[in-house]
Each structure stands twice: as structure tokens, then as C-alpha cells.
Length: 243
Image (tube, rainbow, N blue to C red; front, side):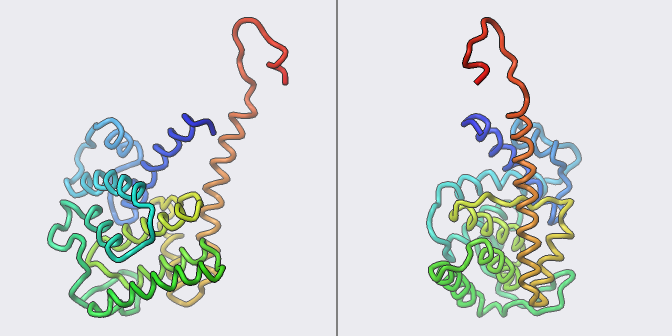
């Protein structure tokens, strides 16, 4: 891509990402509405203030994520949650849950006891970086981290959005492209995590790998179409136009 093409792509990707990661949690703002809302300031009609804030908050999340450029820490995770849940759940922003009375739809396991959240997350973070140092594959480790983070369920609300943000931050730090979590792929994504719940980790990782491969192949196909299209020239032709 040219520099301008890459900037346009990144801007469009961010809109798709915000719309997708919130849609998975029930936000009803469409992709076209999200683009009008976040790029042009045209507020969607008949949408709740919560839905609007869920989208708007990710502008600050993107700014923080792109400037951070350090290892993941507990404070980083808490700050992401505070940004994501701002004006949505102000009583618990940036705070690990203090109750164990949590039910996750479609799951039959017990989440991490609240008093063990910080030590378990610290252990999870240390294990992730230790395994990278030992030569384990970053993408696989990011998927495994994401699954374990969701099982730990450290916050009262917003765990999915925070977890997906951490996952993509890991990919960014490893020079991998980020992954889109789209609303129409919700079932595929959740079923992959359920494979992890049943300790079918290879199947879970394979699904994540297939998702990102298909998304990147689509980008490649679109770029090849542009390259293959003949360039329309105006004015006097030069020999170099044919090289």
C-alpha cells in the first residue's frame, strides 16, 4: 500500500473493529452508522446513550493503545477497562470485581474467585512473556492468553472488550496484523473459546488462525485488484509507462 492507502485502511479497520467488538456484546449500531458517527459526527437515530458511549470510548482506547508500546501489566489492563467502560459503568471502571456471583451465558465453569484475580492475572502475564522468551509462537500464546483471561473474568462487565483489545495489542507488539471481531462471526468466535473451555486448545487456535488468514487474504485480494487494473494515463505517453 501507499502511505495514503495505508492510512485509509487503518481508519476503516478501526471503525470495523469498534463496531464488531461492541456488536458481539449486543450493541446495535451498524457499520455504516458507526462510520457516520465516528468519522463524521452524525449521531445514529434511536440508539441508546450507552451504545453511543461504547463506540465513542474506543477512540480514546485507540489513542492510549497506540502510544503505550510497553509490556502488558495489571495497570495497563485496568486502564483499558476504565477507558472502555467510561460513562457506562462508572462504579466499577478500572476495578477488578469484588464478587463471585457471576454467571457467563453458555459456560458451565466457575470464574476465578475475586480474591485470586490479581495473582492469577500476574501469573498469566508472566507465563505469556516467559513462553515467548522460550521460543513459543506469539500468535498461539496470544490466543491462549485471551482464552484464560476470559475464563478469569476479572471485571464485573466489559471483559470481552478488554480481552479482545489485549489480544490485538499482543499481535501489534509482535508485528502481526490485528484481528477483526465481527458481529456476524460471533458464533464462530464464541465456539472457538468453548473449545478452549473443553481443553481443545489446538482447535481453538486453528479457528483464530483461520479467521485472521481469511481477513488478510481479503485485503490482499482487494490490493491485487488495484494493481492489476490498467493505469489510465492522460497527456503524452512515455516509454516508462509500459515498464
